[in-house]
Length: 102
Image (cartoon, rainbow, N blue to C red; front, side):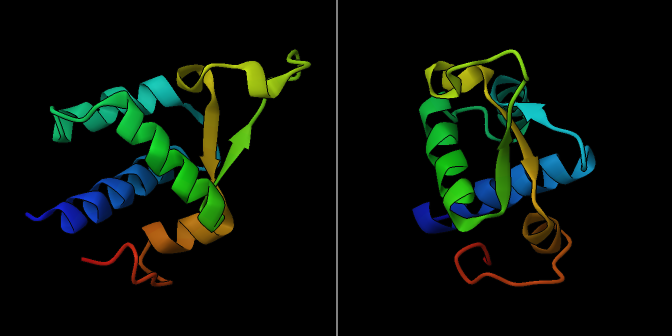
């Protein structure tokens, strides 16, 4: 598997993992542990970059506990994410994005 295929596979698996608990949210460190089962050499920084990418694409959203006054100060591993409607469509392969297709 080349680098581009691996990135696409990881991003798709992230969406599928979040789809399993939709409409609930998952903490980034829990998602990371789930991804390690399939990609044991994955580093958290890679997950953080992919989360940022999927946020920018509108496929996931960040959810916040009500108790936090400064959400940007929360470390990435403690941030929570959920799928958006667009993310569900991508995970279900109802909608296609060439950037995520292998």
